[in-house]
Length: 294
Image (tube, rainbow, N blue to C red; front, top):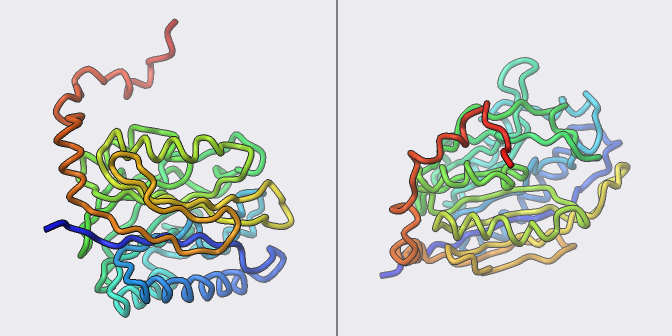
């Protein structure tokens, strides 16, 4: 019998302009997402992922300490609220938030909760960009220090990678080695910057590592920064890299796909990448002294 689970992704535009009070911004986005989570439950979604920093705008478009006010503990108020919904709907969830670990130490984090509402753990974004206009993340986030965990939910073993992480194949491979069957990649990406990579990289991770990928991009323009159009196009792909479902480029939307987890065994039996990998030959990757050689 095939092991089929229903996955969901939520892409959404910002609900309130950035000149509102932070608590109003957060409350409006949580309320918007609660409606979409209810929609996912009504359509039988079993594992759901929200977008990067889901309860606010993409505030790293500027450098302003005001946005430190969006931080909270993990688990904390927002994650606990989502735990209640997870239990109500019997839905495992990935919840990306702005975490304060201790005073002045902040992370771009995704909490993972199971279908009974139990908090399973968290992933902290590992690779932090600070090299492009409008993506000033080192002002806000410390590089993650929890490695690349995989979490056993009631439906599947899942892992998380966040946005800029997707440009680095090393962590994507470690998630596969840790047994992830679905890797969720919440992100914030604008048009005209890396559009071609959006379709390429996540599907390449799926193929190279033999797992499903669900990746999310928010939608719309966010004032006052106007760093570009967040172009949505969230999608699921299978271990062959085939796109199973894709969102629009400009609408709040729930993207749903039925994922046959038995395909993982089929693909890995055909492409024996895990058998044929040679970790003893890759030491130079982790050697900080190794530079590019002509």
